[in-house]
Amino acid sequence: METLDLTNSEFWESPSVEVLVNPRDRDAAEEASLLQHWVQHQPVLRAHILFRTSGSTGRGKWVALAKNGILASARAVNDLLVVSTADRWLQTLPLFHVGGLGIAARAYLSDSQLISYEGKWDAATCHRVLCSGKITLTSFVPTQLADMVKQALPAPPSLRVVMIGGGKLDDELYRQAIELKWPIRETYGMTETSSQIATSQADTRDLEMLSCWQVQTDDQGRIQISGQPLLTAYVGINQGGQCFMEDPKKNDWWTSNDLGEVSVDHLVIKGRVDRCIKILGELVNLTDVENTLAEIFHQINKGHVNFAVVALEDKRAGYRLILCLESEVCFSDLLDLHNSCCHPLHRIEKVVSFTVLPLTGIGKISYALLKEKLVSRGC
Image (tube, rainbow, N blue to C red; front, side, top):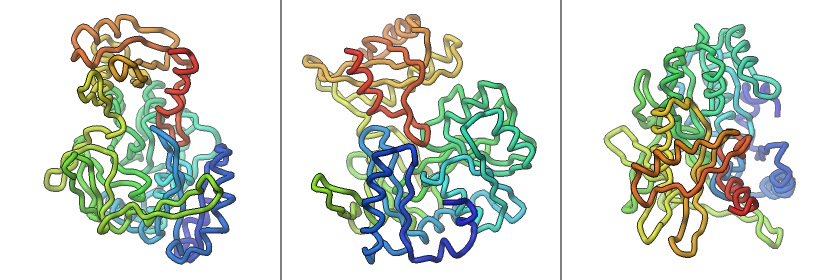
């Protein structure tokens, strides 16, 4: 699908169903070809778009979003950022991801110019496009921002907002980006919510909920969401090759796997349910372990390093923790420092170096693939 199709009313007002897929994902492409005909005959899916979730902690699935829901989300973001016809967007995320399509939806509603970044991702090339195109608004995933910082590329003078989504922004990376004058707005969202749920204001990292949402937590601390941009259903193909659809909402509320705290109009993210494990019978949040390690990286002046903590099954303790680094160097001093001061159940058993950590299509670390690689290495 060309970007031009998304900046006119014909696409957004059409009752057709679109199945967007990463062309490099062969399994997803095969699923999409099977779903494409079936979804056109489901009345509830008229004027919908299907996205395959990134599946950072497991297998992906298809999410059906109404076009008017996507536009409702885009309208709330535009209102927050005070977007006008004078703005110029740079499309830096793929259209098969809801974050990428969201950029096009915001440009369409505001009648602002949309410029596409073409070709393989390269920070220096993207920076030149930002500057030459006098771009005012764009979105990055943390990996893209890290690439800019690594090359010490300053924010272009025309850029007034760069939204960061698709994963938590490392504290040290945030500090370095601010020094380079990048106008960061951190965001929290997911495919099921047509992009953003909450976004930080300028000069703060506090997440403020968008006007289109109601947010609460259940008795387990899981974030629950209700609002027009929420998914209509999950769509998939069963083992027998039959297409199916299921609505995961209850009374118009959807329960996520994210843990958080809600305070008036603000949201604090605490991690994910599926990133919580039990070691020796006690609950351990792997996000907390990663946050501690990020602080230690900063203390020993290692700068920004891509890493992840993976839990592998252990017969005695339940799980054991492995630190995976995107580096040819194994930081033994990091391991020693962490294990000497951390909670006893947060101790890292070993460090494993990778040339590149496996990523999902949108640039998140794929914990599922990483775990497979560790097992194949005999860890």
